[in-house]
Length: 621
Image (cartoon, rainbow, N blue to C red; front, top):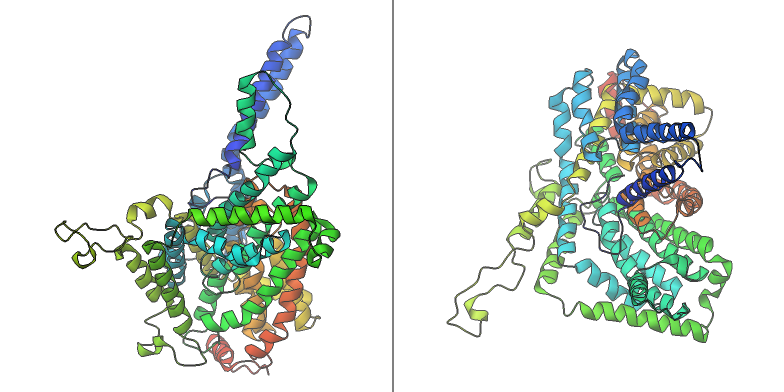
């Protein structure tokens, strides 16, 4: 998986670099063994030649695997090119998936494939594909990423996190719950990947503050005469090594880091602008039903999504602790702490206070960023709240959207000063010349740290979504899916579709999964005369439940890099959490959301849409 622009703190590691170093070290070790065994007393020359050839071929394949797979994948999939427009579209999607999974080229470069393949294969013209990469919905995402960059630049997220932790307490249960609440709250307003990249270093640094003294305290120090060895040990003791911790402390580290990833993904479901699948859903519904009152707005989505989000978070918090700390830990949640537990809690409290006090008083940059951030969020909520007229009604219909108000906030970030304006009226020394202050963020900061890869990835998702619809692939899959599960009630069809989406998102990016299945869900709903939102909303939320594998989403990859958790840890928790989240989503869709969006009737806008497509009036209900 690709990783964000965010410069990771020294507490995190580069997994790719580490793996590469391990491979290189392995090669050196093998060469050393071969050289040592080349003596006649150990082995014959013929056997040495065979061994060197064996490792030589292995190294050759491993070195050129990206190039081999780059050519081999499209060759294997080439028969699809002879199966009509649907087959060509499937070829493009599967080729991109193969490149994404194997990382034969950077993820951002793979995102160019729709602009290359779709026009050449005659599926969608370049004039229709290119605008998808910076469409209105993508600009909304661009705005949220720019705001998150400003928050990170002034360390506002760190202040919010540490301040919240001083209120929730430092018992392991509540410390984890507090970190989940903070992370999910931040993820409501910025992308899940950006949120995890902001919060994971804070969580890891906090664990270092708490656990490293325990490593030193619990370690039995032996007298060693070599001063150099002592110095090396002291350097190692400054780093968090979970293998030197007790089973309980090791479990706490795993819980904390895994919950940060889960909370960033879960928080992204709460607002319609915060994650790629939600934006793809919004783009599809606005294109399928243009200028129609389909009931989806920033505020209505929050009203629908926040209640289940709370249940998702509780499920994650409960399952992860049960997995790594056991039932006894959960049962002791409300018991009076023992003396040793009180000592640990006091130590953790001091670590949090120490980190918070090091930030000093709130700066002008933090206050300014917070105000601009809140104004942007308020503008998104109030633009079209549905329950009352919004400010967007003051302008010509369709001309002003959430992207416009977001761009105003982004523009302010580049002109508002980072420090208090050096005006003469505010200066004690009236004779000193004024100094021009730097803005909250500058373009050099954006150039170095903005994650353009995410914008390109989301643009590729929009392009694929358009291709799936134009090529007829969504209609074909919906028809086959309908014929397969047509005997089931709508509830059963919704459950199966939710399961398929959640399984698929573990092996591809969430935007890619959403771009394929959201158009299919709209087509399926139309074919069975179901409410357009009945299948499409679970299909939009499902891709955010990519809890199982590091390659499923950058958020998982970020916490996996810290080396506090293993692959099996992610999988074991992720399977159970996926089941819980699917159940919660289905229950919500058939209770609260069913009433909120009036899914018991087939809406007039869907009838008009079907009539425009077929020329015949459709009455499903």
